[in-house]
Image (cartoon, rainbow, N blue to C red):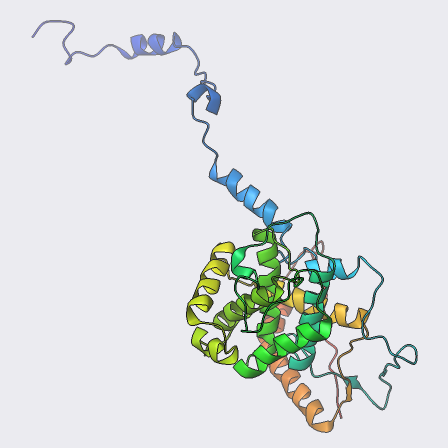
Length: 335
């Protein structure tokens, strides 16, 4: 009990202060690098940056990257649908008459959207790379014909005309009763396939690639999708096994990435409109009728009521003069 080294006997506060004063200041140890620890695994943030960098060059995923078909259409000076008597006369709005087309990003015009998509496919084929890219067997029309008629020996030498592509796409859309939005998604899948699989659309494979893209687009976009067996009734000579295999390999080549963001969809829609204007394939313009003006006015009122509470909250809230932004609302009166 009288042992001075017992745990029950504590040193004086003075001795404890002296002991602390003799301690050296804390010096943090330097961090070990991955090479020192022998761990060379890639950080997840590095992998995400690489994926984002690759996505920026993929027009079917990034909204700011230019579409492939629009770039290909600008490589040469050829313009289709030239008016025989010179440039076409365009209609311009005036104070008494307003000309509008019935195509919007949410409800595109079916006929002219199919024409624009066919024109985009035409430029894909016409200005394809001739550096010997691979031709997959599943898309080869010689190995997997769509009809019983004999495929010519030089089937891969002659580029199809835009009218031939339009007739093929229009037949599928009319028989399957597909929408114009489905045509835009089809074009997105075509360019995504070209980017992922590094293949070009050519005379030997364009029909089966377009068929596979339409097949996927109809299932992704439409609520009541067309079954594979229904396409066998449209194309009488194709088997259900061939359709299933085409869909399976198309999905694998897309890496099962069938998502189409709204920003990418809008970009393809407006690029298709730019393509149509560059080729004198203008959407039909009609004078603004009273019924349509009333519908536009009703939509405008709905939007105004929706954001009325947000505007009131913005007026009551105090903001800094550095970040002050003034939003001016100009009511449109349509009589």
